[in-house]
Length: 71
Image (cartoon, rainbow, N blue to C red; front, side, top):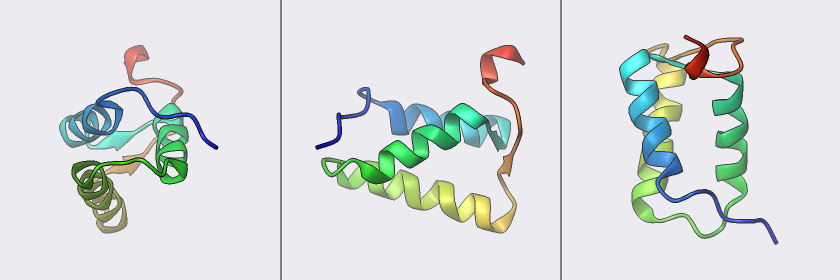
């Protein structure tokens, strides 16, 4: 039903968010797409859980920027 994400998209997002301590508007859309992807690996699920934990605890901030490349 949904198209698969790019290979390593979740792990790249996890690394980027861990290093910068923020996610962008594009990252949020990527997370929404990931939640709809039924073929995620266990590692991807664990990375998403860690991202959401970081967001809940305030370790990672949501910023109103379109892309981290603009930084």
